[in-house]
Length: 241
Image (cartoon, rainbow, N blue to C red; front, side, top):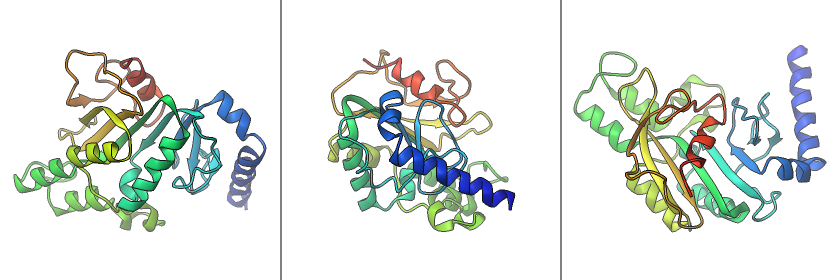
């Protein structure tokens, strides 16, 4: 009963945000966190198709028609676009291009890098879970270990990426890549995750050499808290023109 009341409260909050408070939210928080899941970013409008305590608006992130054009400064997604079919990703990028300000940014993180995954399997690298980077590891990254969750259709990965494909996707949909990089977490040794920053205009990353690899942990260069705060957005925003 308590769980049902809580979920009803989430729906009511999201309904009010969507239909009554949206202009205020966009004015005060011109940042979208799409596919937020259970991760809430404090200075963002957190959107997901599933109601969770983190969600501000319940909506399919492929359809942002309720967001005014050129109204959003930053769009952030973590472990999201690989859950979409390729044609859905193209439609999503078209929507993001429409709602993004001319000087805005998109930041995508948590995209499995198939090249690194395949190489680790073929070279029989040590596993991240277990002794060897075996087929379980490959499946976990390429398919999302959907069998481990109830809403497996949402969890299932439906597209694969490496750096080249990610760059081609951004360019094809009208974005200019600022930075595409691999990274790993503190307790992992393989940079199996991809991240990217892109814009609608040509901008430069504020270092002599763009890093191809980042070790992300904490709050300064190469050390960013990805999932619990919006530090990552601030980190990258400080390093571009």
